[in-house]
Length: 329
Image (tube, rainbow, N blue to C red):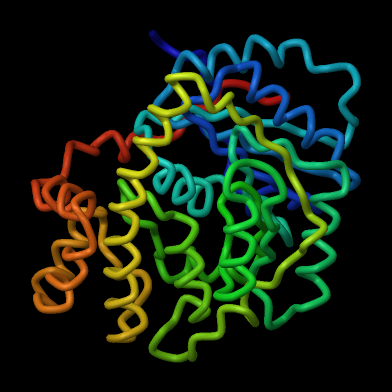
């Protein structure tokens, strides 16, 4: 199936930057869920806002979204612009890399939103205000989860250790400019995208120059809230999704320790993390065999995750395919 495309637009530097920008990262959502996310963003757009919807690995969703957006919803504010992009590779890390290095329009603040997260009307303003109040030290502002399974536990962990929650957070222009200038990219295939990005930001993306200061560099906006739908616990699909999540979390544990070994223990450049998650974890296993072996003792799922990650990386050559602009409204 081929996508209608206007081609990649001109570089952000050739046009005035919007006051606010947002990127919605989607892949497996239904078009109904994605449209509810976009409608919520429209109601939260109290300043001129450019939203880039980056749909990775799902041409059908990109086409369905384009059909729903043409014509433009009448109740959306005139200051809201929206671009829908389709990426050939289905990978969240690749979607974030593409936005940072190719699509970011140079705005002072950019909001990162998962495709199924509906921001509340004041959420963007809360994030922007919190980030601005703590600059120049703060590079990012994190929202705290208020709905969904495990929200209380995640909130407690973030208060204790700091970091980002991937459903909703904001990056300031200095963070995005540094990511571009250093060539920082998240490893493809990564599960713990938010914690890896948070670890890099904790060092201001330069472990060789700055000390770890996660709570200074990433500040909380506790009133910036969003909503997600959760399926009934008794449905088989809910339990299947939970089982898959447990498997991915085991891989995420190995990812986090590999990132810790590279950034925190060795203070090596953030842009050198690795091109893929397989390379990231395999390098840690080679450089720290005793520490790696000790972590594998933590359970069967971690050993199974290592069996997958120790294999050659799958074909991700589609990452080289430029993003296709499907619609601009």
